[in-house]
Length: 426
Image (cartoon, rainbow, N blue to C red):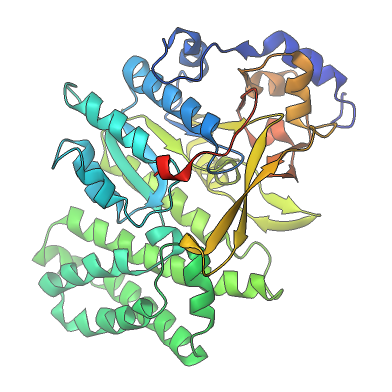
């Protein structure tokens, strides 16, 4: 059987099966994407990845695919690596609420990871569509930057439903406010500087709220509706998973982290996506935009050490073949390396880094060998032919060693990658 150390058989297979694409421009005709219709037949959730945030070509390609899936394949939900709680105002805006210019205010403090144009696409589509396309955030609050986007609406809910618990959530909010930031790169080190008594008090308060929420569900439902309860509970879960993630990240930075301990965020993202699926029409189909490292279906390891169980693994376990992970990568160009810097906006700087030539045995090398500049491949077909395929894929400027054919259902490669102008990426 061919192995990942002998890439020629897979490269030959890829040369015969990769589908060339014609355009990166979202305004261009969509006909070259028609092969996706058959590839995604029976798929309920298609995840579109990227090997790095802040890459212009990936943003353009994901917009094209989103447009194709909405306009030609009947997909009805856009889910994004964006806070669950913060997603509801964006969904309302996408449905036509408020003015076009309001989007800038909604995204004023969000890391500019390319959400603006997909949302504008939804709003334009929904202005004339019979069945609107919804927006769904799936991440922990502020992607780990702050608990306040979850705790503030949670307090509003408890004020009506269980005012006796309001002091508990207010006490949690007071601590959370002391280290809140616009990103996890700001909040995590600020959390680490809290006194251990404050850290433990926050965790205890959130745990008490969560147990009470679950224990008193019949009482809560007698005082309000089930949907409001479900939203509030998922917000509280987000705060709990974010709190756990602060602790896990602090330990990771000091070299004391437990195995795969930062996986709590990915589990929550998977649970949030499934939560949204349960809320919408049973026939709804979802386009999910997130990093390759979140959408892949197999565990993530570096240097032989297990570091994370990604969202895609949980979604594949829950949905089986109704989940399709399409990773986006590029054999050449530049990538956005992020470096922690608490004094910088969002707590990190971005280094426009030139990519080294593709490593032998990588999916990027295989695509480069085909001579196809812009193209995609259905890796499920390689699995049916028992091709083990490449054993690595880019993750920013380094390589993640993984059986690519197992980790992803498809790969789309752009000819090159360039770091986007962040002022235009919000």
